[in-house]
Image 1 (tube, rainbow, N blue to C red):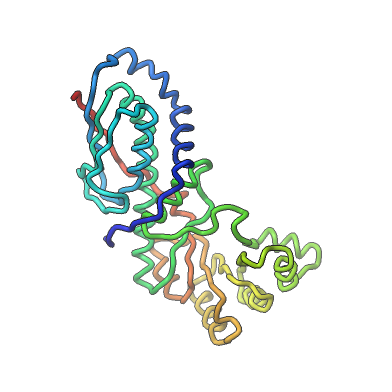
Image 2 (cartoon, one colour; image 1 turned 45 degrees about the horizontal axis):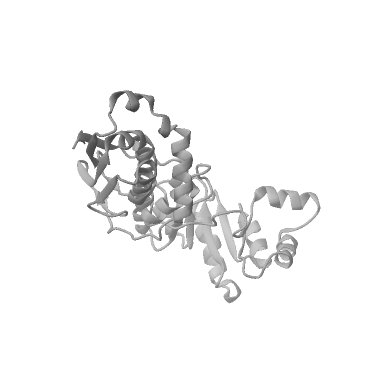
Length: 297
């Protein structure tokens, strides 16, 4: 596996809000089992243990979980987010009051398992793509509602990159937008021109196409990014090669998307596209098996 990636951290206020919501959802402050089995003066120590190999992600999120249930709980990390670890690796120790530690355990693990699973899958996609040539692997907005901040950080931790974060961050004209325009008799070049006149000049305009003819129309209309959706590698390579032969299109970016897997991403990268977007990074990543092995102090 590649070396650890130091990703830009998620916004701390957003992390705190996500953690607070998760703890409230779990009613962590009303843990009837712990209240009836653990005394207030008991203290504990715990080991955060990875039972599968993968990319570490979410240490500061776990720290925030325990901070919110008790400021007295201390987390001491022995590695950092982005590191690849083998099964049986202890990545941190947790110590402090035992009752709140137990009440926050599930939320801490749920978030870290989810984030580590995404980071691990992202690392696998990036490495698989590198076998076909240089390209940037990016995520999509197919994220878990409420967890986008954490999931996109996990993508970066795995070495991949983020697409637009919200609908406000960039123009992406998809099939339904094109169909809506076609119903009014508006062609792709005309649609692109109208969008260009409407949005700030600082925003890139991207459009999804499904055929060489649509790609040519998008290029003629001045698209900044052309998204090649659900095409064969041969078709993508032909479109990219044709466009690159024309100086007018040398700054246009090409993005591949649609059903790309670990088994196919290298062949897609070999087509010469600049970006490969994979919704699977977030919507299909399996959670890693992580445990918090608690013992009395």
